[in-house]
Length: 108
Image (tube, rainbow, N blue to C red; front, side):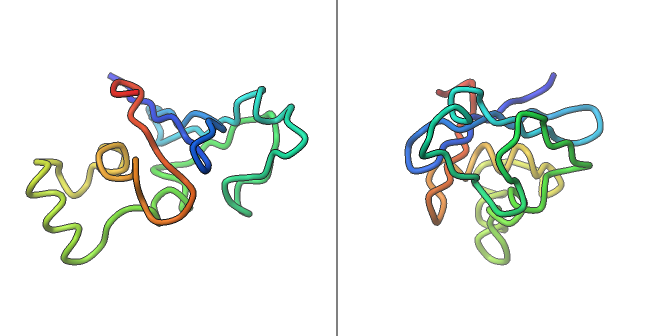
């Protein structure tokens, strides 16, 4: 079963992150791209209509994940395997540091 995250920037929906057979695919929403004030979520993900395909998580999203002692606590408390980066992103990044939010589509 493939999972999906809604990517928001400062509370505004900007795109979708899909889990694929080979990794992940990030796609900006056409409504976001049409805005005159649209900005990319990262310099490594410039605005464009074509999706970004990555093996595993794109490094930008991977860098949002907890590390060290926080990773240990998060995986134990949430019962998520440490090698499930996508699941961990959906479970912990709805309110992460900075303006980017990753909401589990199931919960949104």
